[in-house]
Image (cartoon, rainbow, N blue to C red; front, side, top):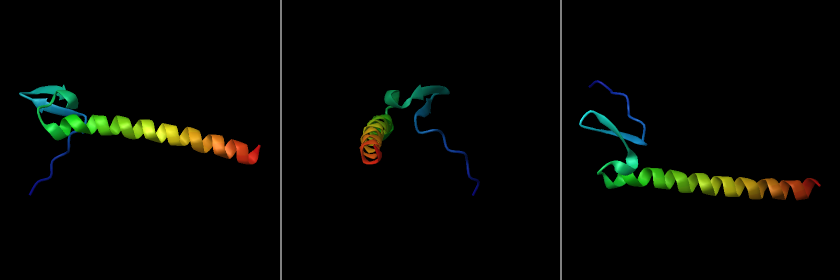
Amino acid sequence: MRRTARRPAARATQRHRTVRAEEAGDLFRQGMPRVARATGEAEREWLAEAIARLDTATG
């Protein structure tokens, strides 16, 4: 069986037109960017807290 390249998660095609995941009809494709944004926000929040703790521990 021949393997094909995967499309990026944030994009899909509909009738030869690229659409954003939020515009896709598939419920799970719509949810993926939402989860990615929430994960990014949580990572940035954690990183700021970690840096602040490290600064007080060494300062």
